[in-house]
Image 1 (spheres, helix red, strand yellow):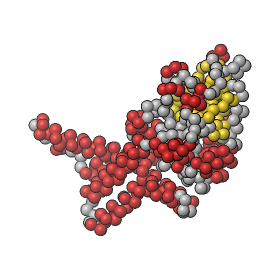
Image 2 (cartoon, rainbow, N blue to C red; image 1 turned 60 degrees about the vertical axis):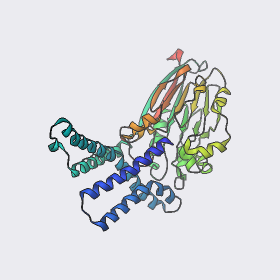
Image 3 (cartoon, rainbow, N blue to C red; image 1 turned 135 degrees about the horizontal axis):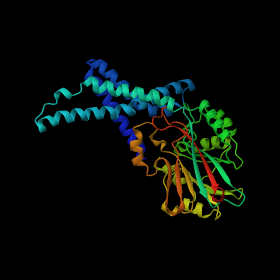
Image 4 (tube, rainbow, N blue to C red; image 1 turned 135 degrees about the vertical axis):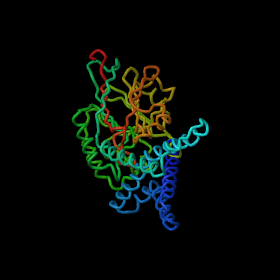
Length: 383
C-alpha cells in the first residue's frame, strides 16, 4: 500500500509539474492552455482508465491505449526527479548569492534548459530501458545444506516472479521464459506471484504455453496482489491451467526430499480478500511440515515474520521489481526491508528477492534487468 500511495502521489505531482513548465515556457493562450491541461489530466488518469477499458473494449484498442498510457508514466519517472534537481540547483544559486555576497546569476539555468534536459534524459532512459526489459537473464544461487536426504546431491529450482502476463507482456516473453527454463533442466519450478497482470481476458492461450514447462518435482505457485486484482476465481484458474499447483496457506513434502510452503498475498492492497480467505497462519503452516528436510517458503511480498525464522531455510519472493525504472529503486529500497537479491537472516534462514521476470505497467526496465533465478540446493557433503 505504501508503494501504491507513493507512486500515485508522485505521478500526480509530475503531471502538474510538466503542465506548469510547458505553460510557463510557451505562451499558448487560454484555449490552448485549457486543451493542454485537459490532455495532461487525461494522461494522468490513464493508469486508472486502462484496467477499466480492459473489460469493455477491443484487444487492439486496449493494447494501444495501454502502451500510450504506460509509456507516459515511464516518461515521467526519470523526467520529474531530474527536473526537480535542476529547480533546486536554480534555487541554490538564487539564495546563495545574497548569503555569500556573490552574484551567481550567470550560473542560473534558463526555463527551457530545465525542461528540455530532463525531457532528453527521460527519452534516452526509456529507449535504453525498452531493450533492457527484453534482456532476460539467468541469475544463479547456490545454497549448501545438510538437510537433503542421503542419495540426493542437488535439487535445482527455477524461480519466476512478477511475469505480469497481460495486454503488454505476452507471447514473446513467455516463449523466452519457457525456453530458458527448459535449458536449465530444473527439478522444481516455482512462481512467486503476479504471474498475471490482473485481467486475463486476452491471454488464455498463454496458459497452454506455460504448461509446456516441465520439472520432475512439479510446478508450484503462490498468489500476488495482481492475481487478487484480476478476480481470484479467474486468475487461479489460469495458473492451474498453466500446470502450477497453487499453495494457498499450505505446504507439502515433495518426494520425501524437500518441503515447500506457500502463502497468499496479504498486503494492504488485498486487505478485504485476505480477511475472508480463512487460511492458516504462516507459522502454523511451517510448523506442520516434516522436520529435518530443507524447507522452501514461497511468498510474493518479501516480508519475513520473526516467529517464522528458523522454520524455513529459504524464502523466495518478488514484488519489489527492484524499482523497475531508476530512480524508483531509491524509493522502493526504503519501502521494502528486503529489497533485492540474497539476504542471510537469523536462525539459519535466508531470503532471495527476485527483480522480476516481466514488467508491470510500462514495458521498461532501467538498472533492473529482468531475471529467472536458478537456485541449486546442494548437499554439503557433495559441495
